[in-house]
Length: 127
Image (cartoon, rainbow, N blue to C red; front, side):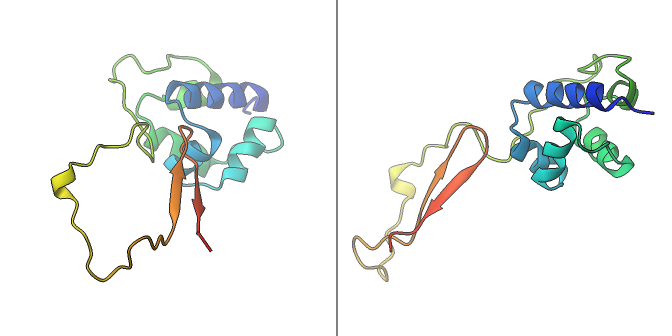
């Protein structure tokens, strides 16, 4: 049987290693954010499906280590793999690559999106 408290510590260790928030980690493995929250708090035990998603998404995570805490993390045979849903630094756009759209009205903004370092974002509409 998996020790829930120890498992949540290992889960947090993985998130710290990849610099992922709970939301970013959930998105990386394809689960709801609440699943991560419940596991970290010890409310729920990990399902087999959850464990498989973690191991398949992060090659540095060994199954035996994740379940029992025995072995190495990160897996010494694997290079660091960066997993992120949103880049930490936005790419610069070259000015000549920007084209104006003749169909838009000057000064009319459809929406503004602010991206945060933890992978979350907020979308604002001007009306």
